[in-house]
Length: 262
Image (cartoon, rainbow, N blue to C red; front, side, top):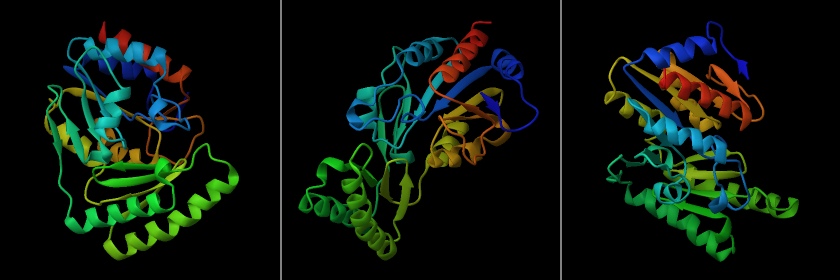
């Protein structure tokens, strides 16, 4: 555990959690609650972490909200708690509230055609098993492939995705183990902005994330709460605290839960 900005202690954080009228824990999924694995559908969360998160979600005046780059359909198969949980998927293009009602924001026909072009390309190149299709993006994954396949996927996807991004205005994003072509206009930061509209001003928040896509959320949280970077290696970030998963993450969440219980 390492503090990245001055002026904080865990005791201060837990005191704020305890004193707040409401408490909201916002968290990314892949790389934060679950380790990266070759088969995306098997990226199960750390069991001990989920046990504590489940108790946090069930506590009085406490909520857990997941904000992920995964689609909600894919996320809901892996992330399950006893208490109702709000989910945001596809970097803010989808939302499912605690009652299970789902909203997907529409994309333009031009954007949809560009995404289909990548899907067709992947099918023709027999890369479909490496392609993740979401409502407003397509992501090509090469984590776990051998060096030759990884280089081939990186080179070929850079050409097709780069060309489409330049032609259509879609955004090309690199992530840990892949590349994503995404419709612009929404991100995790906008999801956090929307969440903040619905919470009391005396709510204490914390956002947990690992990827560069989480920096948008860190920026929106600002001084309204605690920004936590969860990853094995540090990087440039707006976060206040750096935790290595799963042990340091688990210890932090156990402290959060203890504060909730007074």
